[in-house]
Image (cartoon, rainbow, N blue to C red; front, side, top):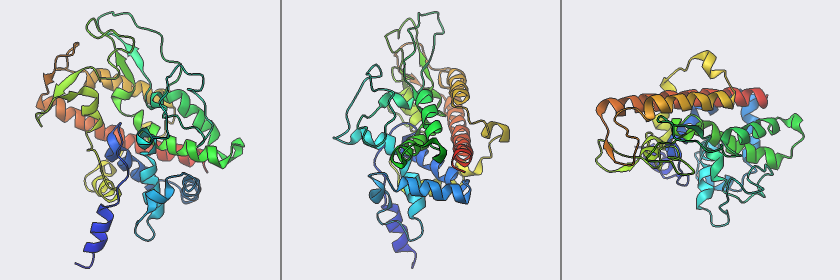
Length: 311
């Protein structure tokens, strides 16, 4: 009973709502990665995160000694959180500043940084040119800037670290690496990573295929809840292949996710038009297994990436 106030307080510490794996998935990935960081690297990451304008919100009410953990876990949702901030503006991938990397003075939401659309068609539908800016392009810029030897300001390095915590997770969600074009869905953006197809899972509602995959880990979560889920039969119980975990090439991550999307996200009973389909038990079981494996791999790769460039 003495621990009850701490438990209640911890469960009330929420990050803002997010999308793409939704906040629960991103937070689990960040927590598992944080536990794998070298102590010196962890200290450098902690110091950089303190420069984020939302740092005080991330750590407000955190249990003593857990402030750094809470900040790191919450930081993984910041790139989605800014979509709800009134002072952040929408933009287009074709804008002149779409690929800029300038730090916290940048008040663009950069929605197009969250994915790498590898285009394909199962029926020979014509494909347009790929967008000029995507998650892989931006992540490579951030990786180059993050080492202290880059000469970049700490403001920019902090901004890039926060985005990296999110984008590594995004690139391991299969539908963040693909756009499918068919005779029935052949607009300029194709199916937008499964946003044009709709499915009916066992829960009974009709939702976009993309949203179905995004929410596999759950939606709005507390830091306490994400840590609990990650450590109690969550992704921390999965040990990724060591060789794969040491692959820190974002291009390779996107290609892997693209193949997983074709093999699993678009597997039967998914159609090539917009007709909502009822998902089978087999589809949903495979989807959960793929998501868990990808999240665990994302956590390991994020830790390995940061251990290399911040050491």
